Image 1 (tube, rainbow, N blue to C red):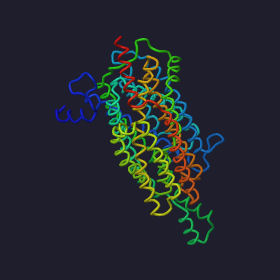
Image 2: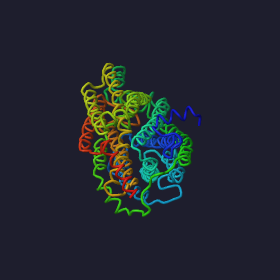
Image 3: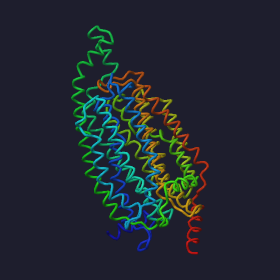
Image 4: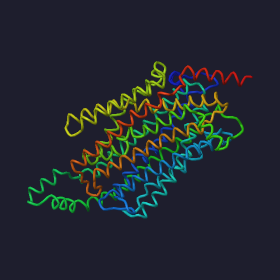
Length: 517
């Protein structure tokens, strides 16, 4: 590595040149693995739902799975699978804490799971599935559950690895800041380019109340006849378009997986574990006892669950809004891009905010701010150009809590690992960082669920693209109001968090003193 570049990276990460601690090359390798991981996570988290409702047409009018509509079946599949998998995280955390290999306990999973997760990701988007078929829904449901379990086996040890690489809270905070920025960049690439491609395939087939009114006037027919006329004309086009969408998502998944897998191996090869637990592997039951002794971690978990809906507009809900209300699926790329500037600036300022205000109060303040911003967006609305400008400004500002949350939560959990070791003599990285993946999955579950519930409540017909004015307002209200409530609610538990930067440093010093005796 060039000496000037290495010097810049040392300053960025806060590492010591030539020391025995964390070095820039491995810190960067850790971030690159996260960059690739988010290619895979985002294609599933953001697009599997719309693949089901729009490409496989489970969101079409009249489609049922058992006794419920197809769109509601998709909503319950997303929620149920992700919550089921979220509660697998403590089990995986326990497995990580019991893992003993020559490479360490967290690092080897980057190597072991690269190909399994690649295969399961591609399987979720196989283009051979039959549209609207109950058998298709069952098969994809099984594949999705298997994907979720496979992803857990990779994700839990990945985030636990950061505490094994360094125990310096400042360096670890910088490591996680850069890594989360790379993860956000990876997710951003997927969310920007996939909708632009699929939007060009779908936008021209949509129709609105205005189209119906025009046909009523031109042909002298009632609204129902006009609606049926348009539906008949474009239904065949939309069916052909759904077939094209299936192949588009499949090709996107293959390309992203091919790019991501080498990054897993690069992260495995160039990282190093320095701090691990005792040689006696803990049982799952023992790990669960450790979890409930880590009361500071539980506050973060509760906050994360309450905050599950705070960014619902960046998940499936935002994609539905762009596609059916704004009549341009590619606008979803703009929605996600608007969040980036605020998120990027906030991410870069996290170390300064943590030092100036502490992680606790940085977290609380940005979420209260986000709640106020979303409340303003809710009351202003969207149904005029100037209102959309206000909404766009709001999205830029909402990048601030997103950027801070993406980094500070990981750093706070890392601090609670030190807290747990100070309190019990055991670190329990696996079980602790399993809670971060649990938070992420419940957040994605809630986001997807609210998005599809809003889709259903708005009475959108995925086959013809019809949405009424009342349906559009319903979609807006549900997406934004859920975010308002979630932003305010998630700040409350953290008010009771006690692991300040000063206290964490004291605990690390006490732990080191004990080990020297």
